Image 1: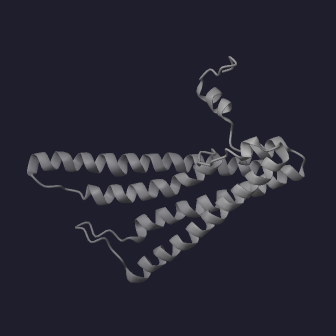
Image 2 (image 1 turned 120 degrees about the vertical axis):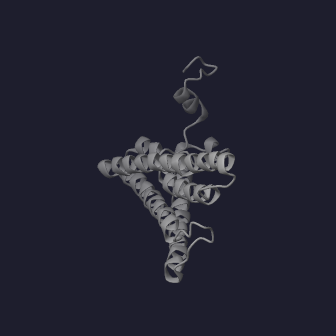
Image 3 (image 1 turned 135 degrees about the horizontal axis):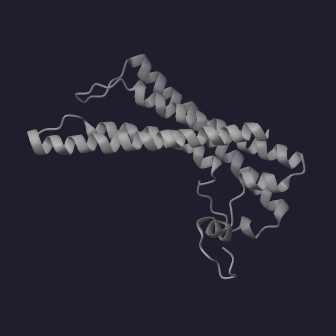
Length: 194
């Protein structure tokens, strides 16, 4: 299980890097080219607005798996932080399962959008005439990976709980407390700890 978890983290990190590259080259470069071409010839060469929209959608899809593995998703845990450890892990597990259900639904329904575009041969209405299955395909693959990671994370946590490794399970699904987050970025807390 540990190797599978490490693999999901590694793949998610790589997809996040790819997403960063897509957003950089899919937004910054086309927008720069359009700004320069407008200044020099009075019109745009690329449809930078359209291309950057596709890049943003791809970036979101590809980055969601990393959000799960790095526990960067937002959870309001005002009440659960006050609960005893055993009860808190039950709520953390329920939250991880709920995230998995949502991720699976996103992947499922985004496939319907992709399949409909494929069936219709849908293209963008701009001068680029981009086949919509290209950006939607990347978007859908990101959602599939997100669903995979979100589905596996509570399973890994349950496996650790069954192996009597509560600390390992908490590391997978529990939110870090504020002092841990401060220590991670190097801010000193009141008690003098970094």
